[in-house]
Image (cartoon, rainbow, N blue to C red; front, side, top):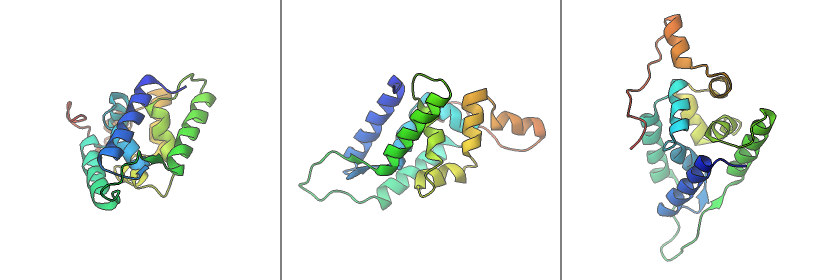
Amino acid sequence: MISKELQDTLNLALAEAAKRRHEYLTLEHLLYALLEDKAACDIIKACGGSVKEIRRQLDEFLSENMEQLPNGVDAMPSYTAALERVLTRAYMQAESSAQTTIDSGNVLAAMFQEKRSHAVYLLEKEGISRLDVLSYISHGISKVEAGRATGKSPTPEPAGEGFG
């Protein structure tokens, strides 16, 4: 079962793709919508990523690299195979963790198995790995806090930078 928050995120991703007149709902649209989900933003920040920078780069990618539907053609975006695979993997990951619902953390972890995705590229560019996401969602282990303890220098975003 999908959590209410994740369903809202999927609806937001679909609305964003439709607003931009994109034919397909992609992982990039999903990640863009996840950046409006508090839990997903908390995970990204705890893994050392900048929500603001990922949002900026995703907006640029969606504007410059995604083809728009021709004028006069109105169609709801279709899920890509990659997005469907991610949701399936998220379900399997949640089930193997004895969770009854799929949430944004499951989806973020599942995204990393799609290596040919610009969304994953942007997460990895921010220094986030699947292991970072799984460590945080499973055990609450923050890469940022671990970095401070070891003297490394990942820095969290100031509060309030995650939304808007």
